[in-house]
Structures are given as C-alpha cells and as structure tokens.
Image (tube, rainbow, N blue to C red; front, side, top):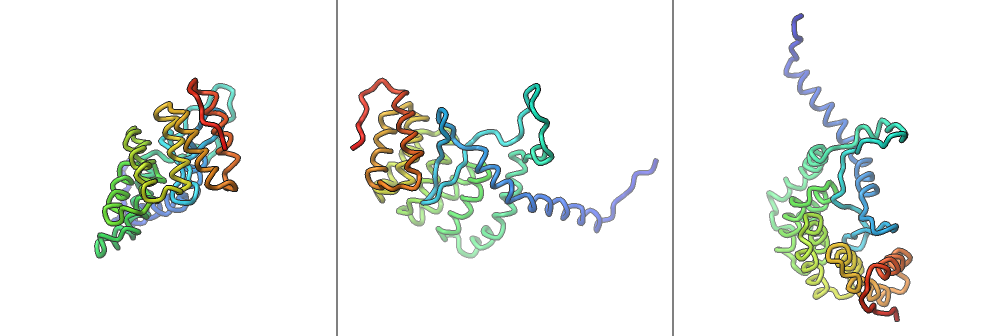
Length: 236
C-alpha cells in the first residue's frame, strides 16, 4: 500500500490546526491549573497569592492520574489534560508577543513580570523565576514580582530562598497582605513552623480586620494551632 505524501501546504495547514486547538483550550486549562492545583493544608485549601489578587498554583502533577477502581470514567476533557510539555508549548506561544517587545525594550520591568506570570501559571517555575528576577533587577522595590519569585522558589524546593524573598518584600512594604499570607503558608508547610505562620497571619488580620479572605485565614490559624506543641501567640 502506497504511503500518502502530504504537500508542504497540507503539512502547514495541519500544524496550524494543531496550534489552533491548543490555543482554543488555553483559557480552560488556565482555569484548570489554578482551580485544581491548590496548596492543600489539612482539610483546608490554602493558596499562595500574587500581587494583590489570589492566584492558585502549585507543583502538583498536571497530567491525569489513573482512576481508582469503581471510579467514574474520565470525561473527554479530562482525557485531554495537558502534560507539562503541552503547557510549556502554550506558555511559549502566549509569551511570544511579549518576548518580541522585550527585544526592543529589554529592561521593561512590567513586560518581564508579565512573561514571568505566563510561565508561572503553566508550572514552568524555573523559567518564571528567571523573568521575575530580571524584573526585580530593574525595579527591586516591586513587591508583586518578588512575592511571585518566592512562590516559584518554594515550588522548586528552595524553602529558605522563598522565605528570604518574602521577608525582603516586607522591608519594602511591611503591610503587603499577599506577602504576609504566603509567608505564613511557607513557614508552616515548608519549615513546620506553625507558630511563625500564625504570627504572620495574625499580623495580616490585625492590619486588615475586614480582609476579603478573613474566613480562610482564620481557618488556617485554627488548623495550624493543632499542629504545634509550642507556645502560640494569641490573637489581639
């Protein structure tokens, strides 16, 4: 049987169709990544935040796991869950126009931060950290990218580096809510320092009594109190 040979035009069309399919799924996979890969703290879902807006992301596996015996069959969408390579491809495509702008303006801190955000949300933490660091080299007092850099370091296993970045952020903005929340999460889950975590969260609630995620923070404090034998700070 003769093998059908595709023309260059047909190959180009097929590749464009594949890219179109990937891009069509980009927004839905962003939602999946942010919704399904939260940092789980006991029975409570915690999250690391970026800037002033909550963004959930962690280094949890992206590809679908095998269903347990007796579990419902995966849906078509679940079967198409992207691998890390797929997500890298999507991130590269999304970052292309920003990278093109950076060629003409390589020290644009905002553009560098935006590129970092794209790679962070697609679990390319090492690449994201590189762009956040470049952004901070230009504007070291920008707390948002530094908080994001800390998250990337944490997800790569550099707990001390992550805490160091968050503590440095607080020297620029001692009242930054996202930094205080993340610092508590990383102190607890990364260093088993429940007392230190509680101190960060109580400071957050003292500064912002009507914090929009107050209920979650209070649950985190309550959960952390059950995991330490140390003398704990009391809420004021």
